[in-house]
Length: 211
Image 1 (spheres, rainbow, N blue to C red):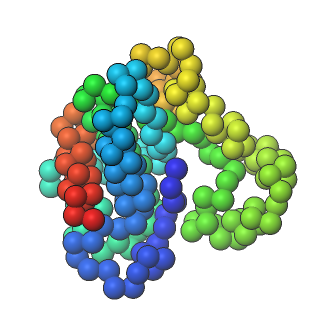
Image 2 (cartoon, rainbow, N blue to C red; image 1 turned 45 degrees about the vertical axis):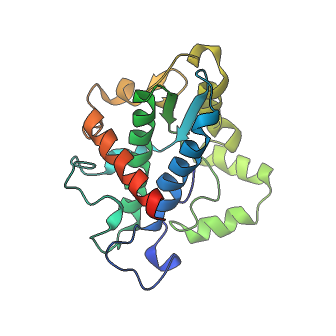
């Protein structure tokens, strides 16, 4: 699932225009590199599941249009939360672009899971969870109305292994058999178009090629 709202200062202090900030590099570019390197080894019935987040819904409506600055290459990356949201939107569009290319590809939001991924957003809670046993973290998840890691794995595993999902492609799921559009309506998010998927694919390919 990658990193959540990783600040620029956690990467380097000498950011330059043209750099791609690290939420995008870790959360979106890295899965692209892994998947495309393995593509020749995939069978026609191989399923690809990309973990994303409904935080993707918080990006601007013009995300991934040709003029949008994906990856903060021109903007100073001083908004870690938006950078994270953009990386998750890129995950969805990457998955869509894969499905257009004949792959059984779907994206999914595992839910709000009680893990250590909140290191950069809530340091105090991160340190608390890091000191807990897995059983204590699971108990905290239940008290806070969050999912445990096992519960968070339900949708990815369903997409990867269930017979019910064997022919699915191009979905953005939040639970087994439940997509974002089922919760928010058709056309949500508005940036999720075939054209935007190709913009993201070209962006990821360009960054990966020059890394």
